[in-house]
Image (tube, rainbow, N blue to C red; front, side, top):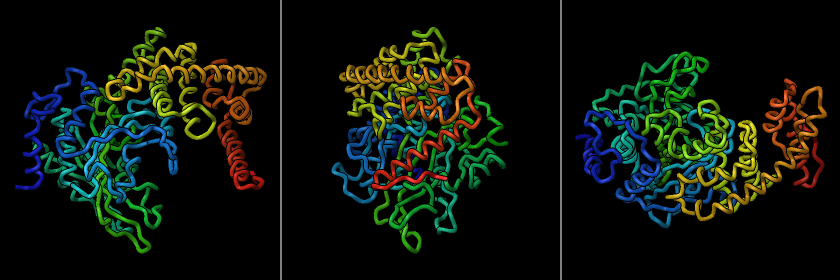
Length: 504
């Protein structure tokens, strides 16, 4: 009997103990006649991990106390990297948690069906304990038997290999997945596409297992070529969920594939297998291979509820429904602005809870940018930005069970947002007076002045300009970025005690 089959029998014995949908049909079909609450999934994940011998550890702060390499906690593994890289964790070799994360770089992507700046990552880690077979199998049963997802709508990706660096194709992970699919009566053939562009051009022939190159390699610097000596890395395998009713956008390529950005597939989970160390002569095996698993809670809730829009899950609906009541407008008419408001308010609230105050630097700027983008969208919806403080309790309600501090200290959050709103209003009024004097339209230099002098972000200035009917110079972005480059150059020179030379 194969290893995967043995693991199947072991994991199935737990089903009645924690399955969210214990009456799912043996055929693999899953019921989608009710919304599965994110709290249920979070609780089930932690229970599942604890029963499999993991120590449940608390969340790390969203704003790291000592910001060495990063300002914000952007992934579940980030606070645990020292242990992945060899340090002994005080809770043992198996740990799990649910980690709030914030990716400010994703702010411009909020407005589609699956991106948010704030999200929770359900995670488990093995520091030299179990490896591929156990990790992939427990991931399978978490998704199919505990969350109750239809395995016929699951697709996976694996690493295609890199001959130039001597890293082979990850056939081991693919074989484990194929065996698990077979246990559900699913024929899981595979295909090698390499890049996402190649997949969009030639398609995958409906392969269940797709091999990509760069997308399925993990290291802190992004790619194999960029890894310095002493940097660890490893292959990863990702799990996607298909929403067949979402139409593929041909603007992204002739064919859809799991890593396509059209929204038909949503990435749910990712298992990283840290096993290589970059040396001066190539790569050598790490003495203690580790596992890093992460699954997005909102995306799991969306898949379990059979909605391709994470903002239709109970993590966001309370805030969005409150917005609909305040504005008299429907979410389907203004999805992007409502998503921005609710998502950014939650991210700003967690930053404030972790002791961050608004400022023009570092973590404080992250908080300021989130709140001011939310205020901008409030203005677009015809709301007085001061009313956003009324949304705080409803936006934070879904997190009260696991993070009681969001209720206990919601008054502190409202106080921070109120003070920032007052500052924003004064800055905006000064900026608007400047905008009103520019009858010939706004250039990038004007927008930089508004940002640098009055603290008005460019996205706010451009929104206000459009609402007031002013024109924007076609090259405003390039000019704005040029002046931002000058400012950064001067700041770097000042830090070194010299005089900055502007970029060419």
